[in-house]
Image (cartoon, rainbow, N blue to C red; front, top):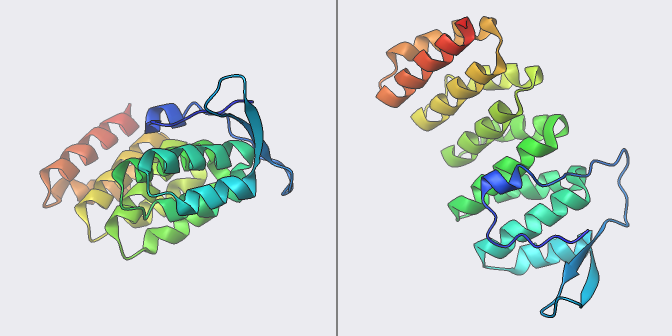
Amino acid sequence: MIIDTIGLDADICSRIPIYLPKEDSMVEQREIMNDHPDERRTVSFEETLTALLTTPSAGEKITHLTSLAAMNGRRAIPHLIAALRDDDKTVRASASALLTRIGEVAIPELAAVQKDQWWVVRYRACEALGEMKNPQTLPHLRRSVQDERDHVRYMAAKGLGSLGNPAAIEDITPLLDDENPYVRDMAERAIQSLRG
C-alpha cells in the first residue's frame, strides 16, 4: 500500500482505511515513495512515530498520523490523542477525523480527555465522539453539555443530535437558553433532528 497524504484535510482523513488488528503487531509497515516514483521503501510504525515527533511541519504531522492510523489504529490512538493538543488547527482536526474513523476502540481515551484543561481538546474529543454516531458515546456527550466552554457545549449538542436517540432531548433542552446564540441554534437543530 502506498500512502502519500501530505496536505490532507479532515475530510480526506475520513476516507483513509484504518487497520485495527485484534492484537498489537510489531510488523506494521507502510510503503512510501521517495523523490523518484520508482523508488519505494518500507517504513515501520516506529520510524513513522519518530518522524511525527520530530517534524515541525503540520502537513508532515498529518501525513505521519494518517500513516500510523492506517498501519495500526489501536496503537495510533495515544498519538492521535496527543495530536489533539497540537498548536496547529489542521493537525487537531485531522487527529479528530482519524479518531472518528478508528471508532469504538477510541471511545475510552476520548472520554478521558473530555476533562482536559484546554477547551480545544475537549471540543475535538466531542467532535470525534459525535461523528462516530455510536450509542456508546451518549454518556460522554451528555457530560459535555454542561462544559464551561460554549464551543464544547455546541459540539456536544451537535453530537447528541447525530446519535438519533430521542432520550438525548432532555440533555440538550437546557441549551435552548444558553448564553451563546450558536449553542442555542445547534440545540434547536439537534432537538428537531431527534424529534424527526
